[in-house]
Length: 57
Image: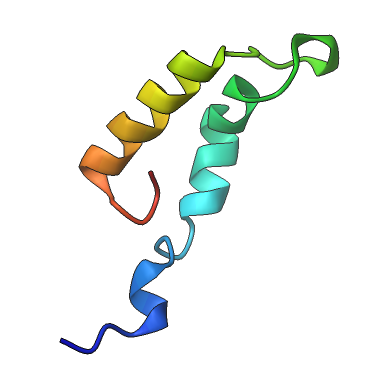
């Protein structure tokens, strides 16, 4: 089942959508304006993203 490497990439615009929604701040240290989720919360966050789009989570 040949899978093209392009299939593993998030859809066009996903990165910008995540940035605009503040998702990346969840992983950013609080001292730099982020939310600074702990490792368990980061893992749960990625798992939930992956439920909607495997290439994004």
